[in-house]
Image (cartoon, rainbow, N blue to C red; front, side, top):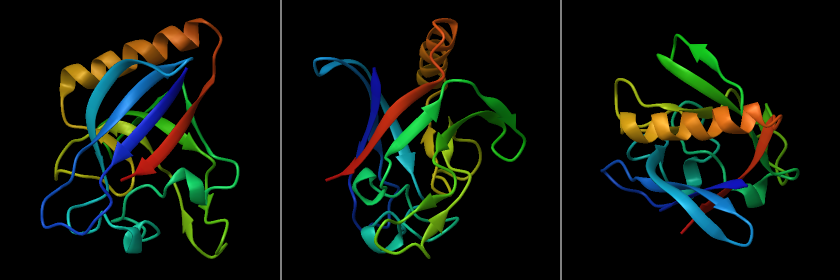
Length: 151
């Protein structure tokens, strides 16, 4: 199984939502949830390396790709269970000075959007995501590949 995050990648005065999907080989989508990454007005290519504002950078810019830990820790800052996205730090393969840190998947509390994390706005959808992560942990799976793509 892998996770696939797909979203629009453009300047907008509104918060742009994308989709997080669980995909099982061969390309069978099992779950499809509404999520966001970044803050409104910062969800465009020029801001993917803007710490604290921009969306998670696309997979194509990350040499080793992304993985999500199936285990979580509770984050006081996010007020949610936090599923860490690796590598950490995230470095731009074209410009190593571009760095993002502490990016994960969690429930969206407070101001809509995130500082780069992938966030759920719907409680039931986040709980369904957590059930899948728990099942994977119980099967001994510690990481899931994540593809981040923008349209």
